Length: 142
Image (cartoon, rainbow, N blue to C red; front, side):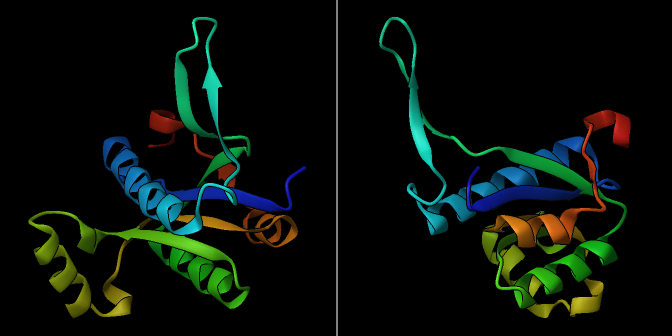
């Protein structure tokens, strides 16, 4: 068992393709910040010696939440518990990255629509925060 747990929680009201983009963005930034060692990344190598690099030994579970407000509440609880996190919101879509950054800065917290969160922290704390959530099943959740 790993001392830390890694999960993504997605807003089931957002279309699957948009969620995939959000999870990719969150994981890219989160992985760069957290690092190779903490995420237990390793290379898998096939019988011909071809490497599939940087795959985590840790399970990475995708969960779902019913709406943005609940994701926002979970984010606050995770932050208060000292859990590392990454977030993707509605302000981070459309236009250039400059447009997205300006839109995020201009948006009040109550106007944010959360597409997803990635949480990484002590196994027992992340489990407690996410214990009431269900697995994300893709299109059947929409």
